[in-house]
Length: 259
Image 1: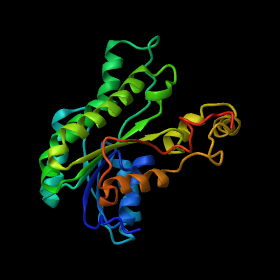
Image 2: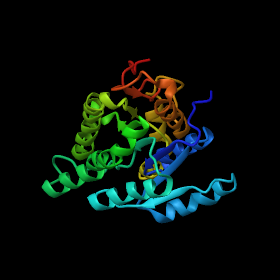
Image 3: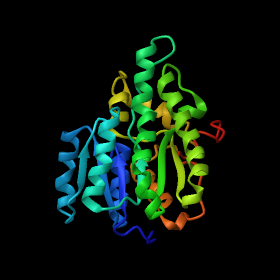
């Protein structure tokens, strides 16, 4: 399906690896112009040659997203380069394990800055251009806001905030025809997930205990599946969809796991 995203300038935070990279790759397939915002120069330099082989000079900006000024500068760099912004994908974040028992004030506040505050900052600074383009925002979220996980209060609270901001912005931006939706992830196999699963003595056995509880096909969601759905939500093919929390998780969050 042609999603009519050709030459649309889409910011993707954390777009150099994992789910973010999957989103970037989907946007490239749709002939959009994804722009990666990342603090990890090494990871983005690693992927540039692959896109170069496709004739794509991928633009990126380095920014520590917990810093207000760097968020502002990153957005401005996109405007300076392309003169427009058609979409924003807030994706960057980390399940950092700041819990109620093992955390403290500074750790909790730091987790919020890593996981939800920059969602607001990036949207705030991109908003003037999104108004001009009648663009779209997609916030990437996690099932932890629905199910809890244990030992990760900061991340769970941030994801609850992401969901609430999605609905709030969808209302606030109605006058500008800007659509705002969230895509909620459960179990998606990424390099970060691989790192976590590798901390267990028998990672294959641990992985099997997880996938057996994923109702659809007993497998993990792929970054490509996330990316393709994000591309749809950004496109005018979903032109009357806003304020929605869309779960791309093989039924993990809501279906009976006894299945």
